[in-house]
Image 1 (tube, one colour):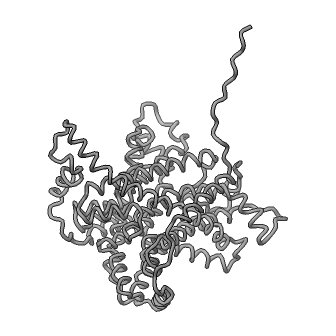
Image 2 (tube, rainbow, N blue to C red; image 1 turned 180 degrees about the horizontal axis):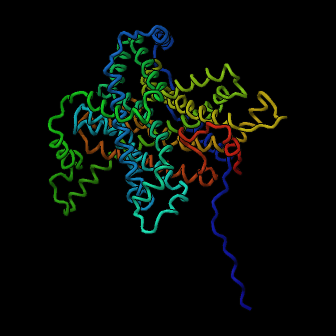
Image 3 (cartoon, rainbow, N blue to C red; image 1 turned 45 degrees about the vertical axis):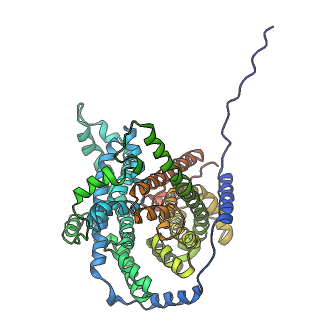
Length: 526
């Protein structure tokens, strides 16, 4: 008899659940925390904190540079408008062309600050630099989000169109009427993000609010800095009043008319040609014979120390910082979200909790790190605090809105039991979806903190640009983009494995109507 072959078993991936993933991230963060630098090195941080608190209590509103506020809004409005327009065009072919998807992934993986540092070499300290630094990454973000909205749209209106209707006509008549409200809601949210981005661009010399905040903080003028911060919070808080469909054309026209003059830079076209043909070309390849073996030997000798002494240490430190901040963000979000829920905070505490979380999430992480570095001294601790607070406030705010639309049983427990046994278990899948989505965003922010002295990838990029080694800087920016794209892809894969990939992950998708409670309350199996 011929023996039957033994059945072969395919290698199956280990089963992942909410609990196992949570413990895995906690373990990784604990290891990262052990190897991270979190020492407080300031001589007297409490004295400086008291001075800062005194300035926040008594802001000097007469010191506000009005044009810095105007230019912050103008850069954001134009940058978001260009990014949304380009993103919509890319979204139309996003699902069909892999090259477009890769391009958009790269554009959104490079932080606005890095785009600005490169664009300054071409356009100087100009409005063009500020606007494009926002528009370029935002076009990739808009393309991805708009493409997802288009893909999920109802096709019933398109089926009744006459045969032979062109693709453009089908989109204009069948898709736009349904998608326009979603596009508008998300664009308004990105405008808020754009204002935070343009504020931060002031820290590298552009004439936005951040430019004056940098000066005030360095001089210890906390009353003046507090006034500018409060002006920025008012801008964010009143966005729904001045950013409406009827006012957008006027905002765009006004933004164009008030743009500041360019400082330095020379001819942008000549700078662009030099940048593309000389500055970013690796030094061993400039005017070299590309067919000669010696050229590529020199290139390898040039690249090796960049990878081993700059890219690799920068990647490790960026990952260490982002992993600790990610887990700290999750803990903070789980602690904070009851403070904006009717069931936990009540009628009085809920509005106060919402205001507190909106203020924290409206404060850019870069600025928080900048302030905390002066209070606590140089280490990873200020970056961890800033990232976890900012993103924890965002996720906590979103989780609170989801909790508010849950439908509870009449005999549901109250207090701690309601939180631990009824609310968190039903929302934990949604919590993981938010946390994994914020992972790539936290990583991008971690990279730019190197500009402030934290030893992440941005530290080496800033040093290379300061030494006019733009070829080295571009290599490190590419490493940053690849790292961000890898984490984003891993996060999406993990969300699919956990079957939470269809849950909302953006602020504009958070529930606001009680009728959505049944959808939000639906549990996903772990």
